[in-house]
Length: 102
Image (tube, rainbow, N blue to C red):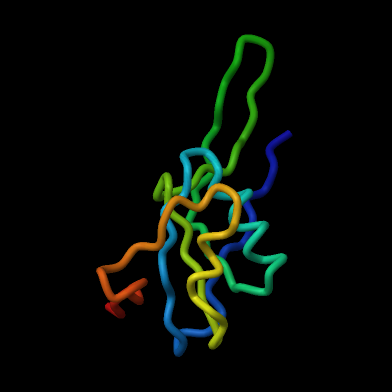
């Protein structure tokens, strides 16, 4: 039986998104930690069918391995680095840079 992929839509296009680099394979656990700390999180993902010798399973895989997008509403941006699994915030020497709108 195939599992449905979760809905990962963006809710508000007016606030700025930032990117955290995380250890490989920890994208969803970092997203859960950030959600518990009241950040809005987005992990773009896709469903992949994996086949083993005894079963087939549909798994949710991150589209950008090693990265988690998060949105802050005036909280201290640097607190994200304290989350287990976060390596660094993507930005320049001035601090984290917001993702450019396209």
